[in-house]
Image 1 (cartoon, helix red, strand yellow):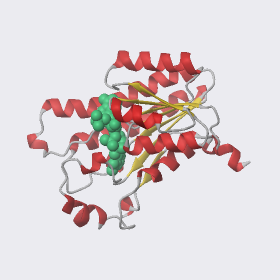
Image 2 (cartoon, protein in one colour; image 1 turned 60 degrees about the horizontal axis):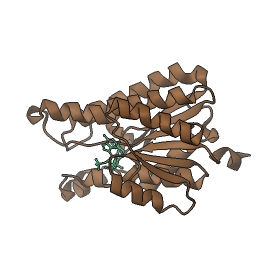
Image 3 (cartoon, protein in one colour; image 1 turned 45 degrees about the vertical axis):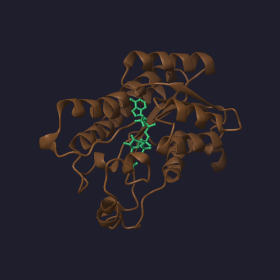
Image 4 (spheres, helix red, strand yellow; image 1 turned 60 degrees about the vertical axis):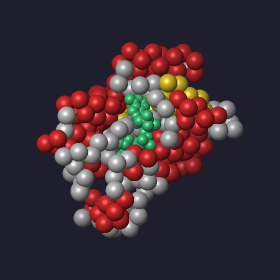
Length: 253
Ligand code: NDP
């Protein structure tokens, strides 16, 4: 019975930002549990190649910029029409920014909030429109940075965007519960992906991030993928409105 509740056979899943990193690990986990997965990303070449690498033929790619509300609406309508439903949404599209706040330009603040917070909300709302009859599961990739201001990098815009994601998840969980739609967030600590490496001197990793993580290492994308697959499945049927930290103990200090 327990194993069966983890199955996602023929559930239709959309994974934003699924071309690489955590998103791609999520795609892999969902596919392995039997889901039909649509990668929705702006990284067309990587996304198309990633989709083609799954021999089952159950993974496809579609271009989607989550900041474009009209495109979000169109893509979810197309997926629902072509696949019959949208049962699972995972929002992994995200960008980081490391900059002291006194130097932060308005444009950068707006962009980070637009992709991470507004993009997540818009995709979640659109997915929910297609989940209303059959129910569904929405999992937002938030961050431990939505719960604490981690150091030493300066990333006020990023932290604010992830805090917004976490509270939006709780709000949507309450609003959508009566429609059978569960909404949760996963809040990873440091995971070894391109996003983590971008613009960050590697000695920060060793001196601060890894040393302050009780488990003494970065997380692997696959470790996030398995948690997301659990939350997406019926095994998590009584979970909604939760923000689940997965950070090797970083936030336990
Ligand atoms: P990656 O940069 O590897 O993957 C993010 C993907 O999202 C990329 O393919 C990226 O494309 C895509 N993307 C960016 N902007 C948009 C957009 N407007 N519309 C659609 N897709 C877009 O990052 P990670 O896998 O590391 O991160 C995934 C999520 O996990 C993010 O939300 C991140 O904030 C969160 N997270 C990551 C942590 C980490 O340590 N790595 C820790 C905590 C949370 P492009 O390359 O063109 O930008």
